[in-house]
Image (tube, rainbow, N blue to C red; front, side, top):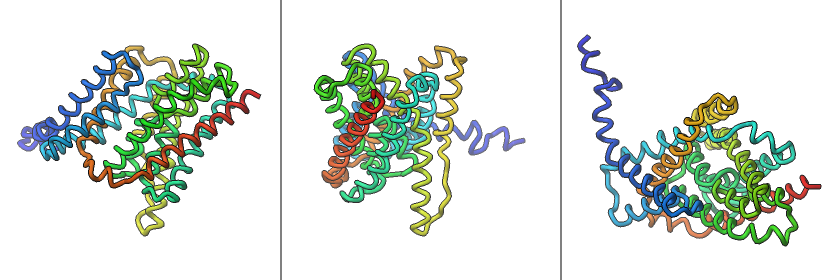
Length: 344
């Protein structure tokens, strides 16, 4: 009875010391995240991604303040448990009904761009001398949903923090260039509004980049582009599971264990998609997820910035940037060919 009253290591009394250790780093990450979201909202610039702002602030903090061990427990919590919960909540923003409304041709295109881009990233990465973990991050970020896919993928490939930071920077740069150029290319390429929206939704990395580029083509383009992008987001969970199998197989070939660990957060992401697709989830819960997910993602990426040594980042060289550019061109080409075939 005495042991129960005092609380064990995992009981209520044991949480006090744990929370005190987590508090400094977690509070710093949340403060950066809140400021990043506020800046985006106050500026009115939708393309000003809070995740990117949080990354830059975290990198700047680390550069000026150096490594601060007191923050480490909170940073670790933000990078993993907090992020995984954010990915689960992201599932509330995708419904199967919206995705299925695209039709079989567009759905097939979403599967193809993801199914080709991720393996191509790993193959091209080997040719360019890019580490497999970093190549996988770039492939998932390009093929699925930018920063969200990168930080989710790292839960499986366990790349170094510098690799994650580099991948985020490359994906942001390539996606932003695409956001500017794609609306200019719609006319010369002869795409109507719906086809253009599908092309933007199937090509660009971040959700906000895809939606922003599609919206430049008008309401019909905005709708088709948004739903196409959501179809790619929906593939996040199965892609991570497949990548987990690939990582396990590589470990087995290298003399390690071949155990495939199914990422629980990916499974719960799909569960949330299924639940919200029933139409029974209250609107307030969906709105809450739209508020919380960017905040939690920004906090996680702020933690990555605070954990990243810029000297190690510079050591990666230009090869990963070249890989990111090549993948961006590849996915845009595949998407254009697919949209053209759908329109026939």
